[in-house]
Image (cartoon, rainbow over all chains, first blue to last red; front, side, top):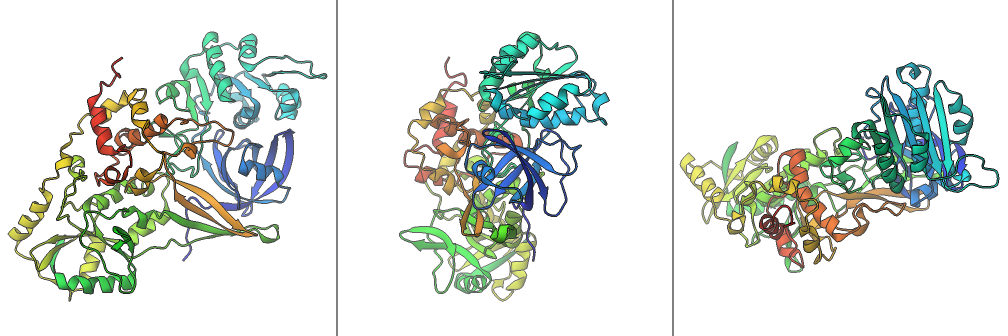
Length: 277
Length: 346
């Protein structure tokens, strides 16, 4: 008798690997049965390198892209190291999608301010490309993408930052780096003060932010200064996860499990939860 | 619900028959009583308050293979491992049986269910034995249970007299057992006798269970930042025995073991009391201190679980009371929570 379990992944193939930064690669993945699951921007999936383990990774492709799933992975631990060692054609295990998603309906008709730091742009990119897709673009107002990384080499998705998003309708891209190099001619400085300098208006706007915890902490202060309310600020959390389906116990904030009730929360929602992330 | 009787001497016959289908029951091993598979002439223990390990072990094994994989020739084959387990578990105390219904909230209800757990729940008949002795550490009555409770049990046995048991069969699995072995079970006694026996067990005094829990969840709503957690945690040795022996703790981790191209993804118990339980690959740990983890364990059982499932995640089995080497157990913590001002005296 065949047995199944939500914890058992399906075989999938890494069809393409694109270097992003010295420690971030983009993986294009296609399930071997050809069936890409339906998902919404902000959701995640579990990637297995069999023999090494499994990690929860945000889906950086947008649902309008139908040919594959994309994951931007920073090399930080056992599984991500194994993924970075992989070559195109490598077989992985895939299960998902997991978690809630960015509130795309709530955001309709509003201006969107994306604030990302480092690999934190990965989950935002799914929503950015969803919003900028021709079928959805008229549902949303002005788009501002404010992004920073440690150095010019550490900027993820450089092609889209330089060539694609600035050319999109009613879209502005603002990029800063903590420390420049010989070739860098753009702004230099941390994301929070840069955000204040760009100074997006809170009127009819929603801010969506993701990055290192220390960046998020100061971005929230800057958004408050700019006049954004807690309901207008959306973020997505990272937590240690093993099951992804609310059973293994570790990713909770109080009575909420980040893997099923999150990872996307408004600041208003987060303030109602124990501050343990 | 049907009632029958079982002669004490027929118990051995019942054990013999059940072990053909696969039976787990308490045995005496290295000086302690533990649930173990019964094979051969192994003697089932009857003189115990509660086995050291809980019946959770049958439904959520300490370690189990979820699937096997093979990555030969740059391919990937994944083959699910069929869940293994007995058909019967005998000698379960009412607290452990009730704990299964708490685990059901986690593994068998909601958006995602665990098919391995569910299959065992569907296939394993839980045969309880009501408590003749109440342990000093037992506090089941604090959670609305009793030495004669039947929640979560398919069958419950009560001592009728020196010669025989009164046996209550409930639901599909319970009735099936009664029908399968009609030669072993005798006619039900008079209704007044049944009533008297069951009531005597269900109203049995459990001294440590007198602790009053009304309002504790609401009090804990405001105690996340309370200094009590650090004070309690100071003595924790991070051994994790509280979580392993607990019949309701369900946290697990997943890991791989591989040799060459072949390997297995297994699930094994984890503990919220371990420092690396929430440690992320990047180095960040949302619960780096013992105080964070101690708070997590007791808040989960007395507050978060209540918010999510409407009841406490504890059945008062007393294992943590008996086994925690530093007395950081549920009963002590309940009294400590009740004894402090919710604002920490600040």
